[in-house]
Length: 116
Length: 113
Image 1: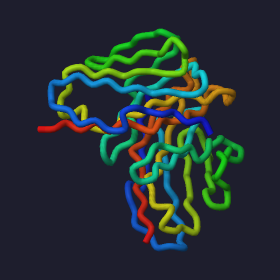
Image 2: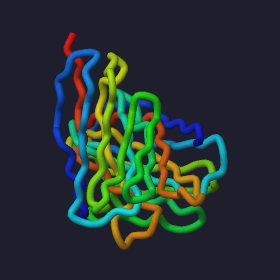
Image 3: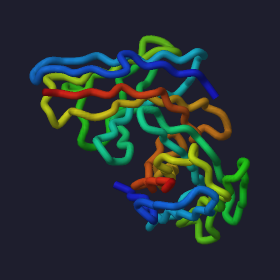
Image 4: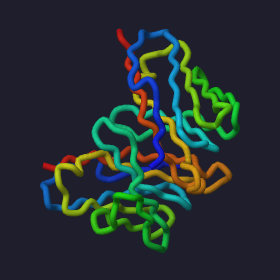
């Protein structure tokens, strides 16, 4: 597995502002992902963060709202732009280790976002 | 998108009881993963299953890959207070390679004192 940290762990933001969430891994990994978990709900994949190229977004998520950077194999950021109360969720990053068992993913502790 | 349905949605049990939960899909999956999420934490991988019929244990937890490849089961024996949390099944959706995961709806386990 890998040790994954996220910053911030939680934040309270005003509507219309933006928040950038950082995800740091203690080793180089091929695959990094960003998920959203709305209150009381399951996890929904936002995008796959690709190193050196644009992220791949899932249906219902767009780059203008959730820009993602992946400057190297240990770090990624997710920005939640022009926030509204509907963006209040837990945002999780995960990593896949790119082995035969590549679909095993390991998660960071999450960032709990509240938008007022 | 692909939905994984988990049953039951929630469980209220007494300490020491055994727990059974399942996860079903309308499509065939080649991998089943079971995660547990504690409050305020990210999900933690408990068990991974890669072969139809496979039965795998991790301590008091046992998971099975259904023969039809459309379902999976998780059992917890002799539950203890630290088993409280939300259990999610997950797997790579069909026709999307092995990288992405879709998650089930979750089973919330509560232990009654």
